[in-house]
Image (cartoon, rainbow, N blue to C red):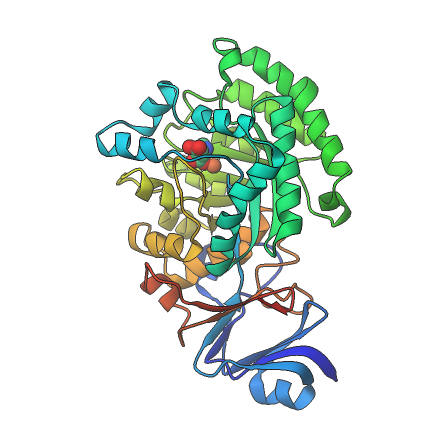
Length: 422
Ligand code: NIG
Ligand code: FE
């Protein structure tokens, strides 16, 4: 058969393949590597994965890549980002160095609300122009699919502009985006002292408008879901407020996500799991009882070591205990201007291996197949398997473990997105 692309003679093809659903527990240590492997791609899709001699006998291709001495793996999926925003918060970086905490800066009017001001002042075009370079960096570092949240608009119009920017960015560059609506990310200043009135606005106006926007967007046409998310934290929204937002989103068919247990274990984790969350994110202060609940649930635990690293913290989410308990763990950058100005999934893997004691295999599965399941696209991307999108990385290393073992450089030698060599 004649096909579009054949990648062959890799030192190893790391498939990350397995049964349907995310990998959990001990299954997170098996990356499904095929020594000397090959991948056959036609019309943007993977049509065969196997030994190089077998695939070379079975296929001729318009384009062949001899990956000699290099490892091949799936493109990374970054399942939690706040990459659409205007401006930066480099000043806060210096305040934190001088001793202020993230929550103190937020209470003083910095933090998310500072980025809200800059984002509200920007039109869709400027949001796109400021966010594109971040996506370009992510792509160069191997990310081929990313979730993107709103949450810096915090008004009906400004949140919808963020959704518009996400759609424009999806169309403007190769990384496929999955939108999440996060209107309850922080309390906008015009609602100071009236959080419940803001939640009323979110439920009555913002969520229905977001659902209508999604139904008319290219995302819905392509089968890409819209998620609802909330920041359940002291200084953000409490459990009762978070419940109202998540239940209202779920009633509009949005998949449930939540920022929980980042600084304070308020009960947001238990709430999100009760509501059938697709993912629960952060989990830095989740203890043994929460970990047992996680392991018993279908939610993917998205941990974010780049935030702990960036905030100079020493207490990382106990992802080791989560995996050992049988939970499905994913990794993400959380790229945002405050808690994690970080585009790099390989750096996140490197931190997770050192401070959360993940094996490189676990970190890779957490950055690919499990991350895909955390954003509802696990049946399409995240592993090198028959029928999945041909999102493929060729590494400047013979062994995929170098992705986490080395840090500070870039081992991504070639990115292939839906069969297109970029
Ligand atoms: O995931 N935790 C809340 N939201 C972001 C931070 C956003 C910001 O600081 O601008 C996070 O860490
Ligand atoms: Fe976040």
